[in-house]
Image (cartoon, helix red, strand yellow):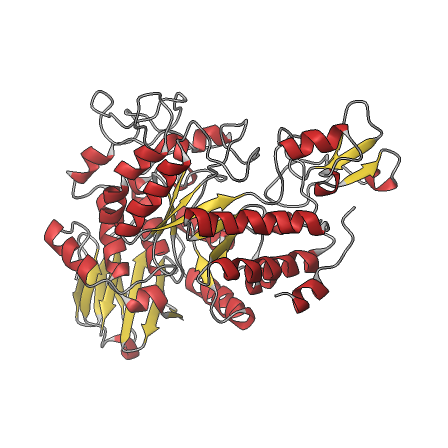
Length: 522
């Protein structure tokens, strides 16, 4: 059972428009103000992204050929979903923490990918699944059949008559609907703990031997392979919910150990919860996903009401800064565990563009889920939110993966990258323009946020400040044109560095067409 506290261990241990021209984009990259980890990160499901050898499965060499695409988009880092050997398509149940899944390529392929990414100033973050392994992992296979196995202590066991095994029947977090956490082993009177399901037995972080193995794994990927950071899956569940302090302390302990291998180590954690539960993790995981704002952005855009967004974000930002002044707010619209933002917004292209505009102008260090920039669609089950990326029309697309038949994102429902690049009004060019504006602005990258209240509740208005740069951002979340009268103290914001199609400023008034935005500078 998990009993030992980690506290003592830690104390002793260690001017762009929405249809921007290519020449303007080059200028934007040369004038870049952002610097990762404050820049844009792009999440990739390797299996669906790009196929290099025609077997239908996305792979590392395929990703390598697309690095120039990501560089041109304005991306400064990639987060790769699990790369390790695994019996499942998603690979969140690892059977070898030191290997690369053979469908994806070899370790040499991965090292070359990292090398090529670094040449383009793109960092590489890999998914590290430490909460649990696969029940097909050699550690677990040996531990399950032999109570005296050297790996027995790597997992959590209890006798079938233990009263705690009767405390089932409820979910304990928004990241799992599983209610049965103790699982049987054939021919044994002992049960093992698996928070997500029986195929993913939880690792026992009360075991010193297991902890050292985890440190060894981390050091391997940093020193031997050269990754820049980890996205840490299920960071809230290292210890059970009734031991939150041990969860918080563990990540401080882990980060201290990883800094010995890479002093600039980047760790971003998945803590699927509101800000009050997320905040204590910031001491060990200075970058955490802001799920709360992703929910609020979608709700605001669907409801056409933006007046409270900046207020909410300012509250969360100030709260997190009180815990860790250097925290990195990893903002998102959706990811591989959520319905795609386009589907959440009922496939409304105008609303999807507005969601992107909000994400890229509010505070935070945005993560883009692959395909968001082309408006990919998808609703659960999970396979249908992880469908193949569309690089070109079906007959021309040499990189498209075919490991699954897509249900939501097809040639009939979503335009390919190649088609969208030619369309100045495409969502791809919308993303590209706003990313360039953000990457060229210190205020948008690093700045504070000051909410501005407007008479019309459809308007989301806020000021972003950093050093000498001050920007006024206005978004119209409604389906009708609105004229906004600037308060007297904001009339000095008169130069547009970004404006949506049809937007215009006339003295102290700004005309905002439906679902459009303006960024004004003093």
